Amino acid sequence: MFQIFWRWMVLCVAVFVAAHLSFLGITYAHWTDVLVAALVLSVVNAFVRPLLLLITLPLVVFSLGLFVLVINALLLYFVGSVVEGFHVPGFWSALGGSIIISLVSMLLGANFKTKTVRREPPRNPPPGNGPVIDI
Image 1 (tube, rainbow, N blue to C red):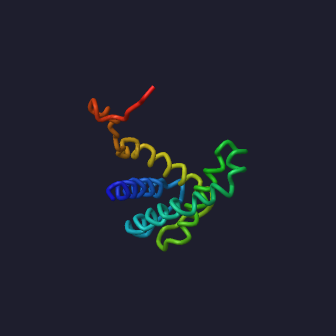
Image 2: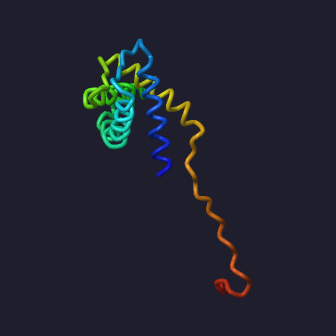
Image 3: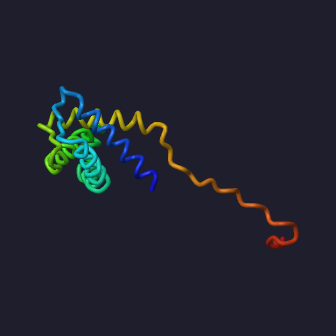
């Protein structure tokens, strides 16, 4: 649960940074609009983005992955049109915003590591209780 909250907070900060870069033109009416936009963007990234990547896989491969930037920009533009109070003026602003959001998320999330379960190697059974092998 803490992982989801932490990732959402990182995305909130990234969207906030992108909205404060005046050359992008991304605006918001109230700070809660940034929180809602980050929440909607995280849901869209979790459910819609994998489907779009699967559908456009030949374009992604042909463009050597650069088409993923276009997908991210379209999703940010969609969030700007869905969330009232959060406005993304056009595709180029969404493209720049998605690049900034990706960079800030990468920088802030660099210290965030998922916990891995460390498995102990199997122990040898005590002598006399193991399997019997007849040769």
